[in-house]
Image (spheres, rainbow, N blue to C red):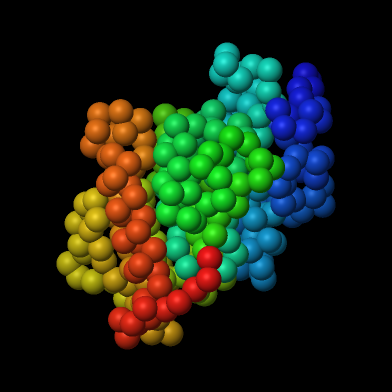
Length: 289
């Protein structure tokens, strides 16, 4: 197998990257438990007591054979423009503040983006847009995000996804989404301070509703249709409210055509941030960021 240098550190890695070999930000070790079936996903998710433990077991999951085969095939064949780089080629864990008040919910890693760099929304045009928008809002320390280990940090924000592996044609199956759901369920249980979820696209909007129902949260009926700037308020079993805010996806299809502009993105990030800092009584909650 060919060993290639990490663009930031110069260290040589296989593609895909074995856990515990020194990749920047790798949460796993060679001893991290590996889920090889849906029941094992549910068990490992349930028993993770911290986000760090959860990130580790997510990053070595092998429960969906089709996704494992695809992500590793991409990591080995590579895109021509990245042929001189090692690819992460594993499930991509969530990224950001462990005390987040705002979640940014996507769908799945991009084959030559996060599947290459090892960090959510990093290394492709969609990531360029969302990180730049968060930086303009003061919620990211850098305007760009090119590779795990580049110093990027999120402030009060965490990026999550219903599916952690790059899927063929960007389309995970219903079974694959169901298998991966245990990870997101546990993450939301551990993220007790979340006050808002920014859903990037209609698929993320629906995934947020499905997850909320699965967790026993109260969801408005009928459901609010997805739209840019649309909102819906969920209520956790403990009475805390979480506001879902819709945003057109930061895909090139939307950003190149002008369906989503920088000003539109900035406005909806600000809207979500303000929603994240209101208590269930409707009064602002102050949080240093």
